[in-house]
Image (cartoon, rainbow, N blue to C red; front, side):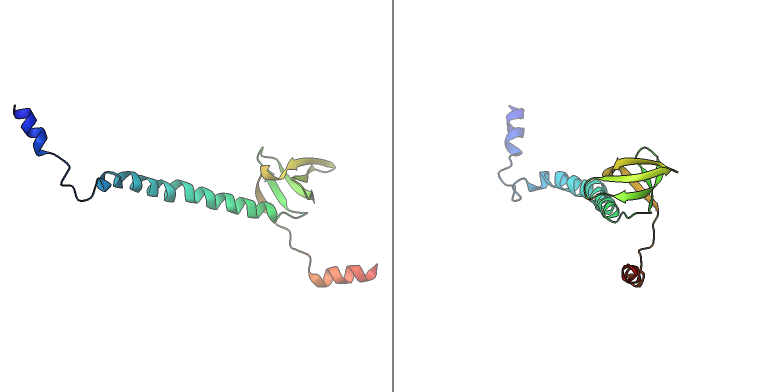
Length: 119
């Protein structure tokens, strides 16, 4: 008899928010996960993609396996030829390059034009 009266007094019929407050912690957790996990990972992937697109011949790179070498040829497709020792060249998949240790300076426009005029 006392139990039924207790249940009757805690009805949710008078709740003006409609239960939205119960969803607030879930939304807050998602927002925290987005800013702490998802967004930094997307930024890191974007920077890695830009680094791979900027690869040029002569760049000193590190592969995912820890091999350090110099880029000899950048193919149009997904492979890059890397010289890891004098006369030893290997083809690696472009996405396995994890970092660029030293960038080469781009050739100046004047030097390119002068070289083409000599031919």
